[in-house]
Image (cartoon, rainbow, N blue to C red; front, side, top):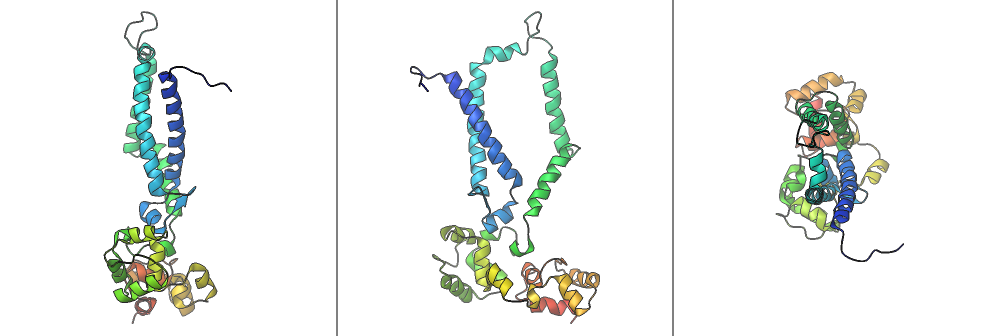
Amino acid sequence: MQIAKGKIQWRALTSVLITTCFFMLLLSGAMLFVAPPGRIANWTQWTLLGLTKNQWTALHIWFSAVFLIAAVVHVIFNWRPLLGYFKDKATQSLGWRWEWALALVFTAAVFLGTLKNLPPFTALLNFNEEIKASWEKPADRAPIPHAELLTVAELAEKAGVELTAARARLQAAGIKGVADQMMVGKLAELNQTSGQRLYQLILGAPRTSEAKSAGGGPGRKTLAEYCAEQGLAVEEVLARLKSKGLKADEKATLRDMAINNGLSRPAELIEIIQGR
């Protein structure tokens, strides 16, 4: 392959740049389309193709900016051919053309259809929501949305663990740079881990593989399983929990429900379930 010598062809450069940016926008857009919500992605340190959601977002923003600039330059270079699309074919003067009218109608239809939640535009958006929701698992939930923005001290309080004990557990697990007022997300980034893992360490929770081999305490049972063992009606228990202002899900484990409702241990939840 021979390399052409001479001056840079700016028209060619902008065309190639627009093309490469388009493919990068296609890739990053697809990754963000299937990505979980930020509260899950940031908490679990979610990655796809080795990049986090924040990194994919940054790439998408930057390539959008470059694409926009290159597109403006491309329009300037091709102003006369573009202007020709707005001219009458017979008279070659500015006049009515069905092509640009249809383009405007199509643009308006997409704009209004999306804002008004009209089909078929809702189908794509609903599909997107289903994909995002599929990433969420009860065991991965943070005690509150965006808990990675809490300080270590605040997260320990949410976990119902003394700050000194929380600090000791983190340090014993080899977590570096532990500071009471440091944001959990920053601490996780510093140690190349996730906020979810730090929370598990603060709780003194075993890793997932250890938890599976350790057998089943009541906290590891789902609400439905526990009710079945105790001969309780799930509907009545759900109503009792909700009457106490607690979030309840029969598919969630008692431990996760206790954490999500700010209780220090599953035993407190069991007392409410039993109606004590």
